[in-house]
Amino acid sequence: MKKHESDIDDLVQKIGAYAEYMKGLTQQAVKLYSVEVEAIIRERSQDAKRIEWCLTYMLDFCFDDGMLLLYKRLCRYYYYINPEATVFYVNSYREMWDEQEPQEDEISQE
Image: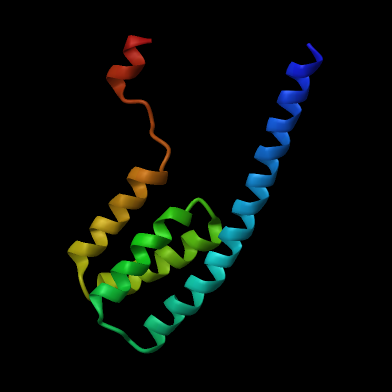
């Protein structure tokens, strides 16, 4: 029994270390992308590849409130350049991060 408890403790420690690593990585990503988003807006860039590259890779970090604010800011900016592409990125965020409300037919099955 002691070995099993020890294995669980080791696993908990590894998960904690991984969570700390991800927190640091996320903070670093927010710093880097904030510089890029500010540059895009300041330069009034119309470069779709540059903007979409940012949005694509920022999406992975949108669980973080700071990154989500940057993502929304860039989407608002990009909307006036390419509304269709912006809708795609808004929907991509929703598919990945929005919590799903149970549908009417799912509720009736319970």
